[in-house]
Length: 79
Image 1 (tube, rainbow, N blue to C red):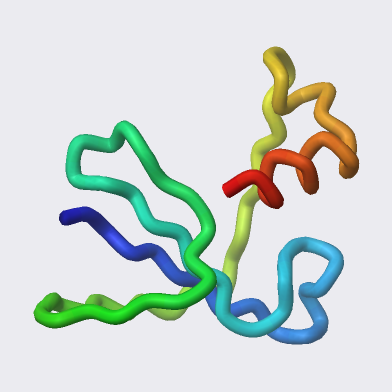
Image 2: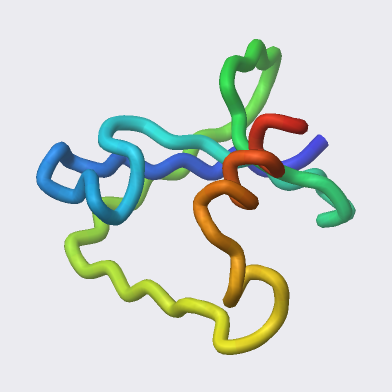
């Protein structure tokens, strides 16, 4: 059990995120989560919200603040 979170970014936003649909899953206990590359679901509820304003906050400290593209790709490949 958990929550599936999806975003759809237009092609004009490709420098911010992957264009098109991009999904993440978060378990109900919030201990695990990550990118979703494919899924099958039985039952669930869908909530949609259109957003035209996006604010991105970058971490000032910790591993994510100093992670480069190579490190991020390595972590994503391991999943």
